[in-house]
Image (cartoon, rainbow, N blue to C red; front, top):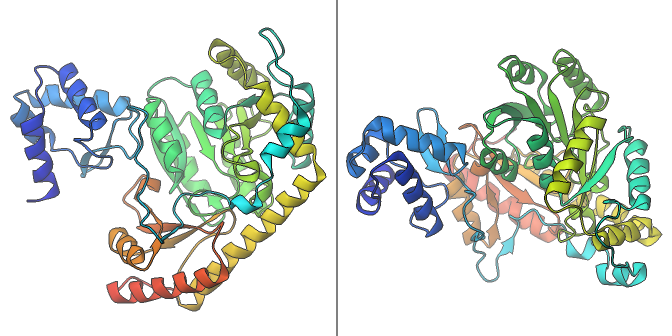
Length: 449
């Protein structure tokens, strides 16, 4: 029985609905209890209508609501499937890593290259603050302005949020309406795709190469009505792409012809990206640049800085005040202490060098085997393959866990796998490259010369 037929049979036996609203409730419940897994295909509209006893129009209406909520994803000529990370419930089952296998799938930094948070917390000894105090520490705001300005980002208006995605979500909430279209990198950050879908926004993929988002496809997306653009200026996830001066100029020219479009830059790796920052956002009517501290200082430090135009930053601050109010001043004081410590600055610089060396070594090893791969900056290397599932399984048999590329693609583009290099040793790099060469030769995947 095919995957679609299995899904149809399961829908017929498990789903009961007398209206579009009930169908939405039943499918959400099936996602929550695990009956429908992330990525699983749904039956066609007609098949589902036949099984549950509703009209195709009613089923289509229910599926449209599920798309609006970000629960399902519909692809042209490929039907609908449950999203990779549907916004239902708090339980997300991580990828199982067999005992003894090397996990190169999660995008984590090397713990050995992160500062000692406990020691910094003891040094800064933050005092408890009460309601009504300023939401951002003055010293942190000043340091943020200096760091943004040092890399050419205007920083007259800054605020602090709980991570890069929190910052992006609040900018979008303050600026767009449900149903608006956002131009994003394709392939791009899977968690961003999930966030936009859960926010009832439409995604328009824009092709990229090793130098980042391509200007002509971006122009076409804007001409079709995209209200916002989100791009990664360096250390793009998953490909490692990084804008250079020429590409940044090309993008600024395109964006200059669409002055009302909101531009958001996600500089998530900041000083450990391994590439210079070429920003395209500043000076526009509506813009924002966010920088997280998660990869340089530690993933559990849920803090990101946001710079932008006065109105955008003011709207973000206003929405924040309506909800949590502020980011913990204890956390702000800790980040300020870490950023102000020369030893931490040296550690961050060392981390940038080590990550660059590990990334470039894997690229060299893969190239020596004739394998095409991408990773101009950042913590990941993107390796095109003919078929993701078979390569993933074959690497798993050899003790390596990597990330399949499907969640990072909006279109049915070229399959690939993502390898996180942050903890990859030289010996492992050689072993992984040899294993990939053997696997790709066996399944007939294309190789570069």
